Image (tube, helix red, strand yellow):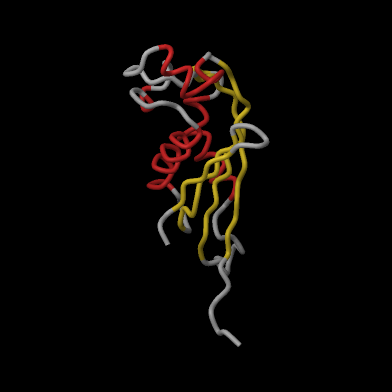
Length: 140
């Protein structure tokens, strides 16, 4: 029988709508179409972002992290910048990046990591469609 402490993870899910176009400016139109298919055209998604925090439960509050504070942080650091925007042209901190779901998961993780009020940021999972997601997590 193990005496290891249980690991607690809590998750907050938020959503936003944004448009993007997958294209590498170093490639020709034909090369981009071959690489990205129909996603080379400007199109939009209703993204779902899941932010997972792990840590010890605070005995007084019963929380690992206050989920209302986490929701506010997600909105401040990510959603207010990307919701109803073109990710290729409207978000300065995405400039020069191809806004794939993988790239967005990494960038969102890096934006949130320094601000997690308690606990440790475990991962950011970003759903682009109901079938496609990418997750960025801290090394373990």
